[in-house]
Image (cartoon, rainbow, N blue to C red; front, side):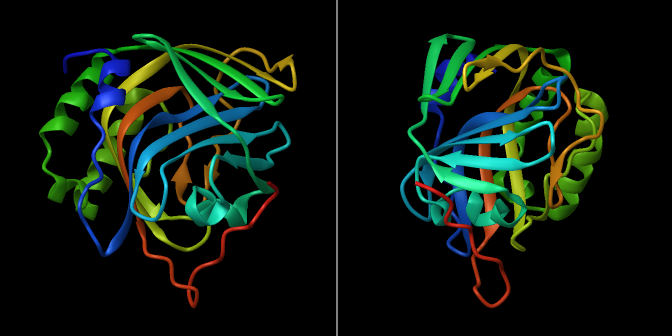
Length: 241
């Protein structure tokens, strides 16, 4: 792997083929736990097969309630798949600003300021090398994803991992994290209050069969979801604008 997370994340984004599924490409923080019980995640998907690209911030409060903030309506964002497990979904202005080759700030005006510094480890470098070598066909193979899930959890120290499964709204999902970095430092303020230091949750969080990592991980890659079927899948909650 060559280049910084910033240079790769800003220039290595292409929507994968596959008209029989809903597809997204971009980067984000797979998840970031905080010792006080808060949890944050970021999705920056400039390429989407179902509409405009978007940003989304996921927040779980210490009581376990989830809210997804998105720059586009719920039906075209993460709430399309995870909405039934949320307390709310809201449309907000979200900015993602790179402040250095390995640093970025995520902001929701009058709500959130989240600073992150990224780094590398032997495990993330090895998995990035493997991820960039695998052809797209293998990234869509359930057996390969199952094997990678079992290896990734212990190797990265993130707890349980599932790269494929069923979302809360009923659609299947497949995640393709082709490049990974660790989150070395993170600080977040919600409603002007510092939410405290990073640290694993007492119990690993999940939404449906999607498990959230127990340490901060930044990824570049693609996500695939089953096409929405109103007869079988729950609808995204509209939320508040």
